[in-house]
Figure 1 (cartoon, one colour):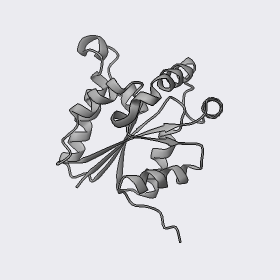
Figure 2 (cartoon, one colour; figure 1 turned 120 degrees about the vertical axis):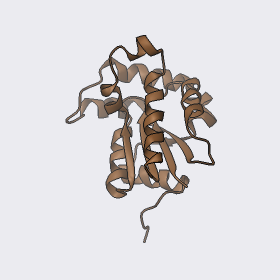
Figure 3 (tube, helix red, strand yellow; figure 1 turned 60 degrees about the vertical axis):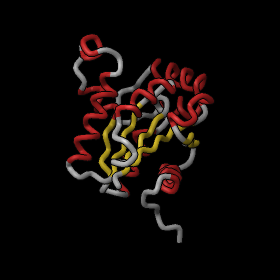
Figure 4 (tube, helix red, strand yellow; figure 1 turned 45 degrees about the vertical axis):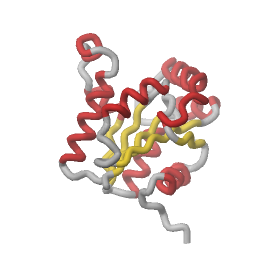
Length: 176
């Protein structure tokens, strides 16, 4: 059965890095980058289609890849509240079509701030980093089921990736 792993977390926590590591280690994963999706979305989509239009576009893309035979899909994005995650989850295929797992990456503010300051080959996110961090921190205890397991992302990317794979039935690196 196909697997969808949604990687959530505040701006700068390492979502893209973890997804890139998973994709490099396991080429059968299709990675839908939230950064790319946001840059692709028309500027007036939210105004014309309402809030959540990018979430709806992401789900449409996920469904298209499943229809084409994808077995493993990674999607990284920012869900700052349980309500946003529920709206997104309700649009996804049912669990009898694909298993969907949400993971929220978390790290102390100093770690996130340092990562943002040292971003290479990517646009700095500025005040969005602090804003999403504080909003998510206020909602972190309420996430529970909508956003699944909260994983501390202060280790090496391969360690965090192994935790994700171990918990969600994907392939796991040999520990021998």
